[in-house]
Image (tube, rainbow, N blue to C red; front, side, top):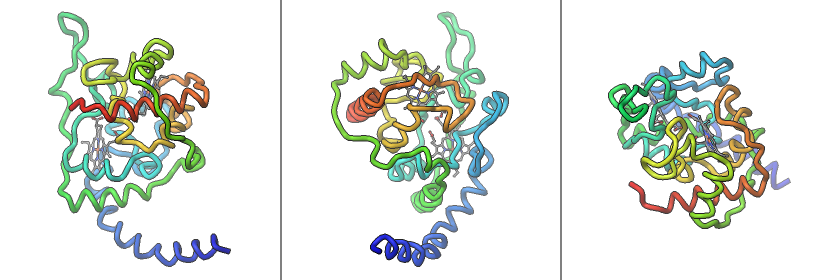
Length: 229
Ligand code: HEC
Ligand code: HEC
């Protein structure tokens, strides 16, 4: 009964929400869809994966923390040290491969109002809800040293991810900001099975146990409390 009243209220509110998101939707189409997939599906072949110009956004509403998106769009800074596909952005240097900074363009920057409208529109893109368990993440703590031991020595995640600026692998996104950027329940779901979200992504499925999934999110939260920037 209570639930059905809630549903009715939600339905009544729907037109207003759609209207408010209208500007954002137009902006998304005009200024973002050239680089970001807003409709799905995710790349089905490696060729499609490597050709991707920006992260898929068709499940933005299940992935990002809206307050972070709104802020980042006004002052974007790099998240993937070597771009979407590192193979396109590294060149040989005297001591091994180095990142060709000039090949990494700056992200378009939005004003406050546009950022708000676009964020609202993005949060309505909700593919993947079947992969998310609301409340899956149970807040807890882990020491930075224990977290690092797991991330580096036990599981080998450091090979692809930086845990502080300039320390760690560069083919994946930095993880020292990931708890600020992404929803905790999404993190659990993604680490459990990255290919469920992105079938061709090269992050290995390590078949992490529930306990370890939780500990990694504790670790990311602890990292995000460090002031690295
Ligand atoms: C020229 C291509 C391009 C355009 C146009 C573009 N983006 Fe991006 N976007 C990227 C790339 C590349 C990244 C990854 C940046 C990184 O990892 O440092 C990105 C990252 C993002 C992220 C963070 C996603 C994540 O998972 O890390 C969001 C949110 C985003 N873009 C939203 C937008 C919105 C909204 C627009 C339109 C106003 C837009 N982008 C326009 C290329 C683009
Ligand atoms: C072989 C490289 C590789 C390894 C090893 C690896 N990852 Fe990843 N990881 C990736 C890539 C690539 C992505 C997705 C990149 C994207 O969306 O652009 C990713 C995404 C993630 C994300 C989501 C980050 C975001 O900003 O979207 C988390 C969290 C993560 N990995 C955690 C881990 C953990 C924990 C381990 C170890 C158990 C691990 N990764 C091992 C390559 C790797």
